Amino acid sequence: MQKRVSSALILALFAANVCPPFAQAQTVPLDPGFDPNHILEDSDIFDVTGMSYDRLVSFLRSKGTLADATQTDIDGVVKPVPQIIWRVSQSYKINPKYLLALMQKEQSLIEDSSPSQRQFDWATGYGVCDDCSKDDPAIQNFKGFAPQLEWSAKQYREKYLLRLLGGGTTIGGDKPGKTISVDGISVTPTNNATAMLYTYTPHIHGNLNLWRIWQRWFSLTYPDGTVVQGKPSGKTYLIRNGQKRAFASPVVMQTMVDPTKIITVSDTQLAAYPDGGVIKFPQFSLLKDEKGKIWLLTNDGLRYISNMDAFHKFGFNEDEIVDVSSTDLAGYPIVDPAITVNTQFPTGVVLQDKSTKQYWYVEDSIRHLLPDKIFLALYFQGRNVKQLTTQQIGTYKQGETYTLHDGELVRGKTLPAVYVSEAGVLHPILNADTFESIGWSWSSVVTISDAAIKNYTVGDPFTVQSAAPTVDDGTSVASL
Image 1: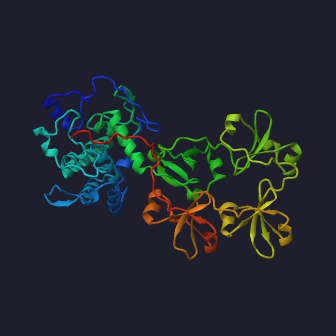
Image 2 (image 1 turned 135 degrees about the vertical axis):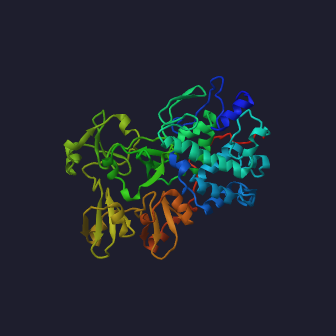
Image 3 (image 1 turned 90 degrees about the vertical axis):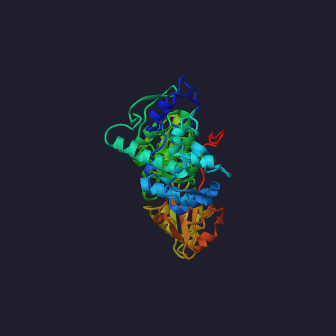
């Protein structure tokens, strides 16, 4: 808590909505992924298209009771709460998501099943210091749900952003690149949003709570196999097993990813994902470890090449061998069996039956039926297709049907549902709002035969979930 200050000083600080600094440095435990120098993106605060009105209503209904609550607007008319939030958002070009997170941070208002009028009256904490009395006559002009939203939005748009864009600082003196001491921690905001957040709430803990709420509500869980590009960093990652794995270079990425399927995601959303091992090498790289063993990097992992006779049989080039350390190989599984002179097609081959016209993918003498011709374009583009007789193809042992890769978006030719593939299961996406909230593009949806769709197990519907750490964000209202 902050020390009590005089009413005159409080009034002087109202203009910036800031309170005096802590008298002593505080110890604040920080969550993994939380960067006090970069809390939110500018678009997290100012992207007015961040949430549609219908989505706002459904979000409020899913979290608590505000979707059906009413309050008095600044024109004296009682209106539904969502309408007031939407009006303020559109008037000041503020992201509705940010207004929701701010109200939760300050008053737990969104998730409280039975909020008091006092919580509504000080919804965004505007004009109130931690030790200030909400009954102080000097702050009653800020009291009320609509005035709280109005003053806060106006502050961010006019007293913070416009002053920053004019080449100066926020009304509180903060700006990107200017180092400040917050709770005994040296902080250098890297963007306008973070500078503004410290002007509004000059404490680490308060901004940590806001970040936790944002991660819990708006940082989404992406299916395995999803490739995301952070904004504004431009870094590209593969989502796998709850981690984000960076590509070491564009060349590595291009060997593994269809660039049209990369989705853009706020760096703030990605912060909740822990970093996995960097993807350093292109598919089918030849890697020599410290013991002199040579490995072929495949889709599934590393395959040991048992000897140089096997190496030369398949036309591998010694000039393409890359010397690596055990650390470089640590993130890849070892795939059996090893490649020997008896191995057939270690890098795989696509075959077509001359009679039935069916396509097969053969690797290690095992053939996998490609259930739809579209699989050629999806996963074997540029590969030569060898035509063989049914008898010749039958000499290879038949394995499981080739499946859609994780993260693939598909629909049947006549079936209306759109699915996302994950671990060999199709999860239906129930509505356009869910689809678009992830950042998927409708042009990325692949149409395959109804028969191919019906061969899959249909799992639970895909839902938008949080990717945030499961921690207490400290937003319960202890006393009002």
